[in-house]
Length: 109
Image 1 (spheres, rainbow, N blue to C red):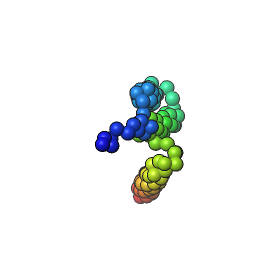
Image 2: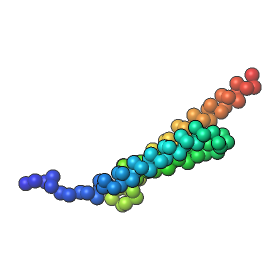
Image 3: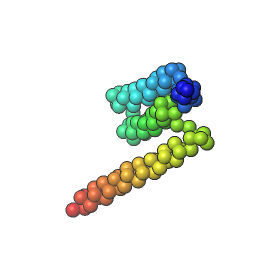
Image 4: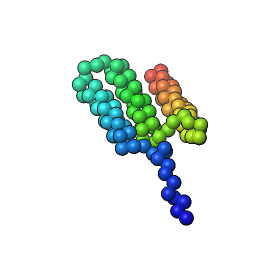
């Protein structure tokens, strides 16, 4: 009678994967903080380090904590992730484009 006794541990991570994800997240948070606080790198290099660690942080969060993968039975996860990235690129890219044009138009004045 107990239908909830099925063991579906494949969709959940182990304690080891969660601890690994936590440690990676902490390291990927400390690296840009240290780079900014030390001031040893140029502005462009600092921005690149922040951007790269941010992308890596997103990937760690998605894989370790949200269990996103490319398995055939979880194709909807990948499809929704691609849709989310597309909308994010459109919104952020459009906002940056508009702000760039506003800046240029204000400087001409």
